[in-house]
Length: 412
Ligand SMILES: *[C@@H]1O[C@H](CO)[C@@H](O)[C@H](O)[C@H]1NC(C)=O
Image (cartoon, rainbow, N blue to C red; front, side, top):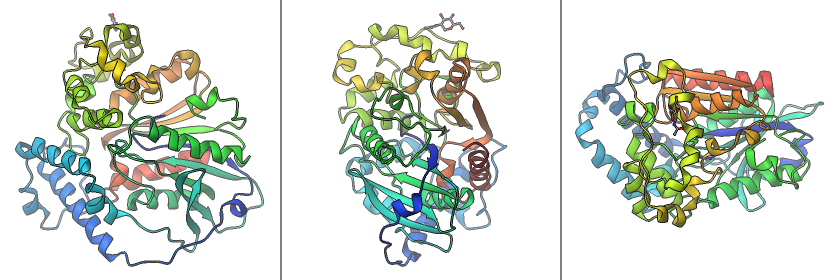
């Protein structure tokens, strides 16, 4: 699965605690980070309060604050401007320093879990090992954070909390991987960093069972993933006019323009790809046969089609795809894999959110996996927004985390 959104793959770990224990680091003050975190959440919450959100979205837990005043600073009219600023900051690469750096937490062990930063091969990872003694095989979760290939880190406060809870509640070893980010690094660096880390993990004969498309064909990998969990995943680049892209084009967190920007930033710093994607004219006519793999008119359940009429694809210049073949690569767009490849994937848990441009990617993948005979548990969050597991102020964060961990517990 593409590391664009959260995903994790899991298996069973043997003797993990002796393998993974390394040095801990001293605890540092978290007040500064906490204020930054609250500020970011405040702005986002304010934004969510002010922006006309769908009615069934749960209230954030911070509504009785002066956030409503702040909310007026942010409005839909400024939306594109903000997105532009956001992109600018990421491109200047100071973005992570001024914002995300502040939201990182050091690897701090607690009474239940030992947390360590280390390297798997050349990839920095954060490892969570339960303190409890275990006589049997330990389960393991390999967690890949989201952030459009441009943002985020295993040390991000929300992901750290999620991984810590997963380790504690499942009594499992959680490996949360980092990868080098765009725009400094483009595809396939992100993919390969993650792939190297997971391969390293498996080559050590630590995992007993295991999954992911490319790993299926890799003769070096003898141990298989047991399950995969895809949390509002980004799965295709062919069609950015699916009903969910159309209906949620201006949703907070991941509007269409930002999603397209993330994809193109993942591939290249050249803006031609982004401009073509905006017009949904980036795919060359030679790739026409691929469209049946993401044909939402035949793959989406009836209720998501409401009011949308499928238009035949329009094609763009061939040299774009020649220059940036990555956007048609299955490592970027797992929906472009043939059924024969999907068939061998493991049991899957897939989360989609109603108010998310990527919703239909997930829905189509559920359908294609099931058609290929893969058992899928589909959790469609009716009141969900993209990225909800980054914001532990919404009740929905805790609900979704709970459902995800419970499913892991029952299926891993
Ligand atoms: C998509 O599916 C519809 C049927 O639901 C079909 O009429 C159309 O030709 C298909 N288009 C492509 C590009 O596969």
